[in-house]
Image (tube, rainbow, N blue to C red; front, side):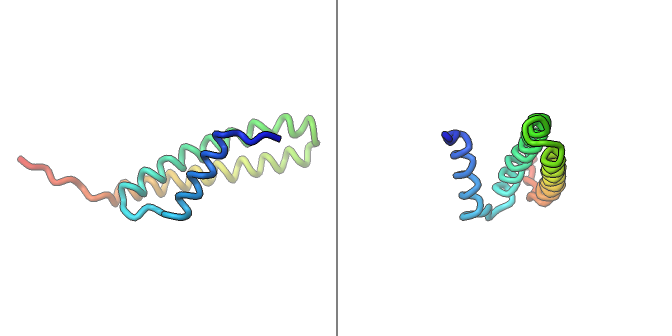
Amino acid sequence: MEVDPALDALRDRLAEIVASPPDNTDDLVDTLSGLAKLSNQWSEAIQALRAPTRRLVGPAAAASVSVAARRAEESFIELEITLGDALAAQPRAVRQP
């Protein structure tokens, strides 16, 4: 089975986040934003596997895929909440008159 280069790049980016987490609010906001978008796409991708899983493997496996998709959606929601908190915590730029 051939590995998708896009998945390799994603795996590399996730490893970078683990090895060197953001150390300031701006970087944290950027990272959370990217992960939230990815989490949403991840949820949709998992949900897209439900029908073929049901057809090819059976209803129990399809139910497991549904649970995985629901958990991915919950992850997206939690990341969006955290992103909102991080945005609120960003230092506000001082406006010069």
